[in-house]
Image (cartoon, rainbow, N blue to C red):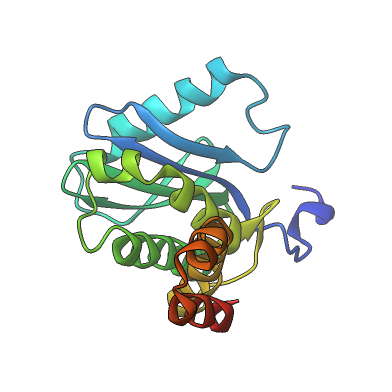
Length: 179
C-alpha cells in the first residue's frame, strides 16, 4: 500500500444504502465517484453485500477491500461502507445515528412501507449525518432538531394566509415562535 492511503482523512464514508428484505435498493448514496462509477456496478456491489450479510448475525463485514457495517430491522437492511482502514466504531456510530433518527421520524415503525412514505425525511436525515463522505453528526437528537426544524418551518408559510383570513391569531403566533 502506498503511504497516501494511510493518511487520516475526513472522507470516511464511501457509501450509505438501504435495501429491502429482497435486496432491492430503496436508498443509496455513493460518496466516492471512483469506487463504483456506474449504476450497474453499484447494484452488483449491493447484491454481493446483501447476499453476504442478509442471513448473518454479525454487524461488520469485509468485502472487496471495504469495511461494511450493517443493521437489519423488520424488512430493511441499513449499510454504511468505509475503506478497509476506516475505524469500525466511527462507521457504526453513523449507522446507529441513521437508524435511531429514522426510528424517531418513522415513530418506531422502521419498515419498508413507512420508509417509502417518508422518503423526503429519510434523505434529509442522511444529508444531515453525512455530506460528501464527511461525517457531520453522530448524535440522533441533533439530527432530529435540524430535520424537524426544516420539516416544521416549510409548511408553516402556507398556513399564514389561511390563519390571517380566518382570524386565527393564536396559530400565527405559535408558528412564528417555531421559526
